[in-house]
Amino acid sequence: LEEHFRRHTRIKPYQCSQCGKAFRCNKDFEKHLKVHTGEIPYQCQHCDKSFSDNSYLKIHMGLHTGEKRYKCHQCDRSFSSNSNLKSHLRRHTGEKPYQCQHCDKSFTHNCYLLKHLKIHTGEKPYQCEQCDKPFSHKEELKSHLRIHTGERPYQCQQCGKSFSYNKSLKIHLRIHTGEKPYQCSHCDKAFTINYDFKKHLRIHTGEKPY
Image (cartoon, rainbow, N blue to C red; front, top):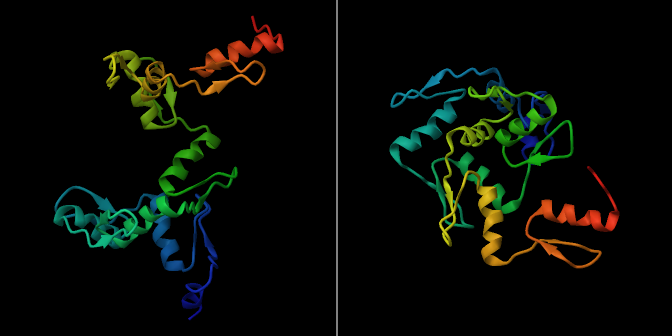
């Protein structure tokens, strides 16, 4: 009865000490803890994936059956589970229930919070085999590897020039669009990239870094 009452209130007495997420009932809290312990006893019979809870396995089974019963009325996207729909709805509502215990940042999904926490812990588990440089996130390592491979997957549709990083392509596109987002408040001169803008500011501040 007490747990049922909480469903009608915002009280969430069960809080995870690992990531800060809170729950209304102990059952959901214990289910969540398996995310951190790595316990995954529920095995999919169609592939080699395993899950911490039977409900997650049922959600996963939707990938094999193709069934998507849960529809978003904001953008018409469909999902195989109600939990995936609820997770998606945060994009429309802006809700960020996963709060960092070390700073004031919050996130829409737990995976983003766990990724962010590495900033505070200094953990860098992904190491480049070419130069031994460590990274906090797998995506950062993949991006870094392009320095060694020379891969340039981001191509400008206007002139055909290619870039290793999407950020570099976005900066390059300003040459074609004429966009200059960095404007000097002292003389109204505008710049395409932040580096040139900061360099220009030294004219007004008199700063001589070298």
